[in-house]
Amino acid sequence: MRLYRFGKLGSLDALQIHEEDVPRPGPGQVTVRIRACSLNHRDLNIVSGTYTSVALKPNAIPLSDGAGEVSAVGPDVTRWKVGDRVAPIFVQRWIGGDLLPEYMPSALGGPSDGVLAEHIVLSEEGLVRIPSHMSFEQAAALPCAAVTAWNAALVKGNLQPGHTIVTLGTGGVSLFAAQLALMTGARVIATTGQDEKTERLRKLGVHEVVNYRTTPDWGARVRELTGGRGADLVVEVGGPGTLANSIAAIRYCGHISVVGNLGGKATIDPGTLFAKRASMCGIQVGSRDMFEAMVRAMEVAKLEPVIDRVFEFEEARAAYEYLESGKHFGKVVIRV
Ligand SMILES: NC(=O)c1ccc[n+]([C@@H]2O[C@H](COP(=O)([O-])OP(=O)(O)OC[C@H]3O[C@@H](n4cnc5c(N)ncnc54)[C@H](OP(=O)(O)O)[C@@H]3O)[C@@H](O)[C@H]2O)c1
Image (cartoon, rainbow, N blue to C red):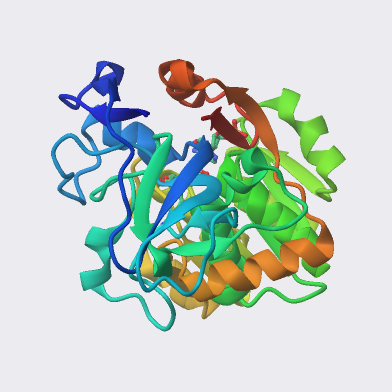
């Protein structure tokens, strides 16, 4: 089978294709024939060697997100049979309850081996059934970006019908957050730095779009758009460069789910958060229980993930370059 492994990290030259034997499942494990993978922002940081919060296993297989079908089951497997359509969960050991730090080494694509391979072996506990209405390309978009959006908006964010949510930019997490919020009956205010993406956001059903480049104090604009009340929830993927605006955008006693760090520098006055009596919490993707709940909801709503482009297996480098260019709207996928 063909697979990628990281060589020396630091540039896209680290993506090296190999041929190896198809791995065989041990007790409690299954082999998954991967049919599609998707990229997340962290994959750019990992390959460039700037993702310092984890010590990557040497020669690890890249990417956390994929979907495929079970091709072999090991002894004692009870959850799956050959042919089942599945996706891996991001933190393999996080089944339910609170995330514990000792689960983190089991995160796929860094530090553990990922999914950019024709076949992978995982514990039978580390998989979920994919939505029946989705193709493998669509389902490959779910494990990190969609589950993060589900957790940030609906679990920790407690989004309710009639709430107003703010999403930042048009990457994977933010578009899933917008789609899940629309499914919930919430009002969505989306930001983007590129006017040409405005129409696509509107087509998705987003209610208001604000360009964060031409409206640098977009937090104040969100307050205007909500009649001075502010938004109930911000899914904060920007980090230091956007947090002050997110606090400005939020309503009294609103909530900010802190998901990402896309750059910038800022000094945040904690008094601005206190003045709003607002809450803020960090998000790490989500558990298997959350992923399964999200699959059920997506099946009822027939939600269709926004896939921008699909690359072939041999074009993995081009897929990374495309994500890095920032031209994407939604998810970048690799067919395996
Ligand atoms: N905590 C977690 O568990 C978790 C999980 C997933 C992702 N993340 C993090 O969340 C962030 C987003 O990840 P992703 O995979 O969704 O990213 P992505 O698909 O690469 O999308 C990034 C998008 O963000 C927008 N953007 C860039 N700079 C921005 C800024 N200053 N203000 C607002 N928007 C900006 C751009 O959209 P426009 O072109 O429309 O401006 C860009 O396309 C990353 O930092 C990632 O590491 C964290």
